Length: 261
Image (tube, rainbow, N blue to C red; front, side):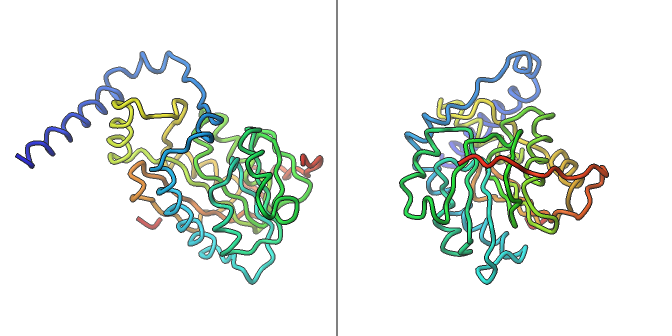
């Protein structure tokens, strides 16, 4: 009986995922996805997300250490898409950066950070889009988790470029994004069936799409699939080159606004 229940559940989820991804693709593609309500999300973060964030924070620390970003160096870190950052405290404790900048377009989420104990000292916030990012000084390390998948293909590439334009040559860029494994598809399909999916514009990205955008500006030095999240993410660490492959000069920034598996 137990085996039957498990098998029927898996078949139901697989059937849902197949129909969604292969049968009704044209109809879905013709509809413009609604934007994620980030203010609503920050007002009521699901318990499951809080648990997943602890694991992701640990994976980030591991990635920073792999790239030799350690507490011994007084580094400047930029988190893009980090309104109401859930990684701030862990990274402050483990990496002890001299500056920690959070960049996001969501005013409500940024305002939540204004009550943090290090706001105005180590922590600074900037209401700015990654697509038009302008920072006064490039950082030693730039990262985002769950950001670039909320754009179409062209703007996803531009978002990746925004990461590299915000970091020094030789600096580190870390990007984590949903990866369309079978586990991701089944988990997302299950949440959609229950009406619990809150990210209508999320577009799981292939490794190839992201790596092609990264290699214009940097070299991949480490990667890891975050399987325990169920909604699997691929975390990629890259180091920025002195000169991008495109041969175009990296922009100067002005105008501060207060494969491991």
